[in-house]
Amino acid sequence: MISVEIKTILEIVFISCLFCKGIIRLFKTFDYFRVLKIFLLKVYKHRSTAFSHYIYPSLVWKIPAKEKHIYLTFDDGPTPHVTEKVLDLLKEFGVKATFFCVGKNVKNYQHIYLKILNDGHAVGNHTQNHVNGWKTSADKYISEVEEASKHISSKLFRPPYGKLSPVQILKLKKIYKIVMWSCLSGDFDQSLNIEHSIKQLKNASQPGAIIVFHDSKKAERNLFEILPEYLQYLASEGFVTKAL
Image 1 (cartoon, rainbow, N blue to C red):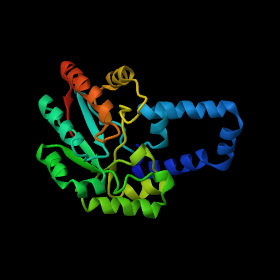
Image 2: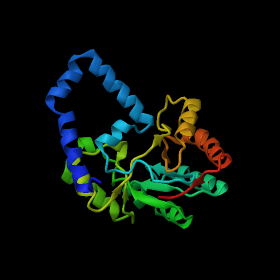
Image 3: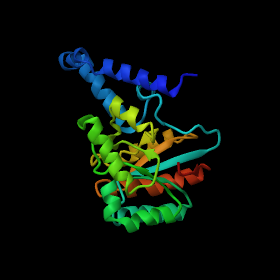
């Protein structure tokens, strides 16, 4: 077995090669590479792929499971009315989930954060201000996570937008379990095809899968069209929905 440290080094080497100037120049110059890049980004938007796993093999993309356990996660909250409505739905179906919270939102809506915990759900760190790792220096990014940790008691971390640099990964993994996903619902996408999203979610519903929703105002309309039907599907298929 390859150790975690070696996996991390391989990630750094691979990503450094992937983003070298020569590769970027090719992406800009040839239509073939431009089409390939767009395709990969479209796939990445909804489903994690083997390609993603090879880039970041030491991050958590799914939970090893033989039984029909599935892991629902909600990013970007807590958000007044939205998170509370999600909690009501989860209670109605008798399921548990994990909420990756933004530090500033926890600070502003402490009562909702406490309700998440009191209802038996897990929480994770999603930075203080929902920053993009690809646009933020490593030191600044780590300080964002540390600031959020003052409000969020958890060793689980998910990067906003799923974007991290190799250096950020190396530093964060000393403290946190970095959780990615098996499938994104795409609820944040205002042009989302609801039927297509639900089909994607059902197809991705395998033992150990990690599913992402967003308890934010931006995702609210799509979230509450998708989530009740998906929860009903999981119940009818005998899945047990658990917190991380």
